[in-house]
Image (cartoon, rainbow, N blue to C red; front, side, top):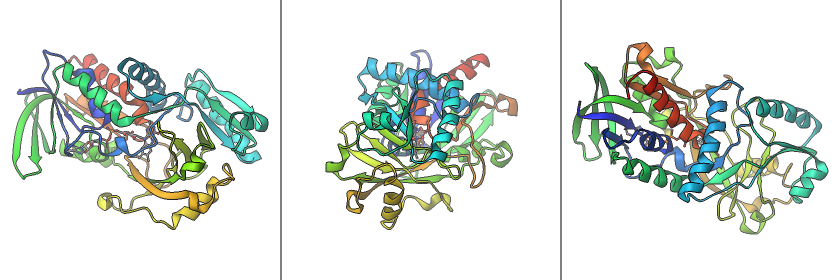
Length: 379
Ligand SMILES: Cc1cc2nc3c(=O)[nH]c(=O)nc-3n(C[C@H](O)[C@H](O)[C@H](O)COP(=O)(O)OP(=O)(O)OC[C@H]3O[C@@H](n4cnc5c(N)ncnc54)[C@H](O)[C@@H]3O)c2cc1C
């Protein structure tokens, strides 16, 4: 074998896996189809370090979010990655929503979330005077992180361990051969090359189901097919951005996907509203511009909690696509982190369906990949 570990995909998960597996005595190669690391979903999200409030107890999402959040704060503090533990409110705008806060509180408790305070309407105003709400949950351990700075710090760590990267190169073939995998890649110039690798980690984000299919897995039978869900953001006028100092979320919608359009802040204090959730009809639709007509819909929803907003305060900003395993009408879906030895594909680890909270969980996902390979005696 030419290579010990090949990682397909240089988003935050692939780079975290590279950092976790890199050792001077092990040849680790990361392959990324774009010209730089972290250009896809990793840099098109809310940038929130989630506490672990929402996810089904016992799920990988719940465990890896809580473990990942703790590890991520530690990593950011030690490596100087810009981040802020600014806290978050989940605000109920009516009685029915106030009742649903209790279910979130139960999940948070079951997931081992350390701190979560219950607020009445006066408590909401005391923390966020411009936000309107009947009741809320306050999570002091929710924060924000600069995702690209995180990718850069993780990649430095991977390089220090001896990992190498090939950019502008797409993995197009994955064939089982005795003792490992033949990985075929295509460069943007059209060149084709192949190498042999003992281990392959599929961290290809929106293309991770396709990579699994290249390895011969029936992605429908395995439950690996992705159903990408687009989310759009609107920026908030600078003058209004400063009116809210924490992340503010609604109670998640009872139907549909996502946590609900929320108020996010970046490290410079710029506020955005988003993301909504629209399943993409076609996989390769790309990201056409945000439909400006959505502005009124965003405003309608947002004014329940942020009555000071006006239509002119919202400007279409950016979009991201969630690599979700959840089909329209289906229930919540978990992350997949699976060493495929049980399918007769030893040395292949699939990391699939890493939608939110994948940024938060990246270090824990990487630790899980390493643990599964170690248990199988592969590393
Ligand atoms: C709208 C939105 C909001 C979100 N908000 C949050 C949040 O606030 N907090 C949070 O924790 N999470 C959030 N998430 C989820 C988070 O962004 C993702 O879980 C995370 O970025 C996934 O990282 P990744 O490395 O798996 O994927 P990606 O960043 O997509 O990386 C995969 C990489 O693989 C590469 N690739 C694909 N195919 C190939 C191939 N054949 N060969 C070589 N390279 C290939 C791609 O180019 C890409 O760079 C959000 C997601 C979205 C869309």
